Length: 237
Picture 1 (cartoon, helix red, strand yellow):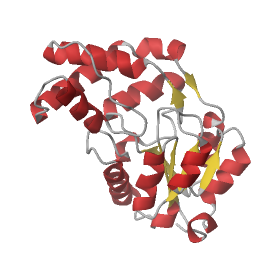
Picture 2 (cartoon, rainbow, N blue to C red; picture 1 turned 30 degrees about the vertical axis):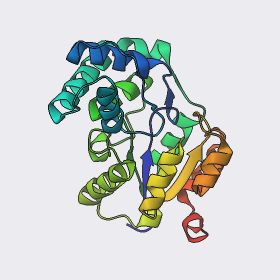
Picture 3 (cartoon, helix red, strand yellow; picture 1 turned 180 degrees about the vertical axis):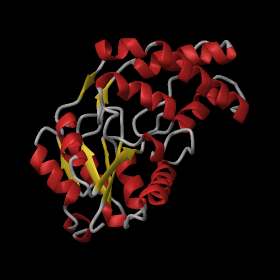
């Protein structure tokens, strides 16, 4: 196939808004895994589950061993599954998401997956209630269980996508996210970075991080599609 494109989506505050869930789930996970009460909440935006969990454990006097990290992960998965039925009421899909994903899915030269700080199982829980799984291949995603470094998640997704679909040149890989961490992870691999201002970071901060294109949200489908599919974005920086 010719100029194929690999699109790597972030989840939280890029595809869906589930504000408040993180604090609740981590508080319950810490109590369930180690019997500890949450007194310090790490910053979430753009960070991986492994980085957040390590900070969480260290801040509460734990050793942050791999066993402790996995115990928190197991709790997070169980809590997410138990609250799956509540998410549609508590959250929302962000503007333009359905339309952009559907338009990209209609193209035979586009593959869509995730690069997210979430665990794979939690990713499924967060997207399933909103009907966002049909066009996104979760099997080839890069997830927050892998590494504290977000750039490692991009490389993991690129490798898995290459194994399943054949290789993708760096300028045919597009990372879409709401934080400078998303942008920097894309740039680390020479990929195209698209910043979306639906999170806690300003459009200016996304531009300053090096995003090739920045949108207030994804509601202008044609402009977003142009940014995703335009090879000149990468060459122009």
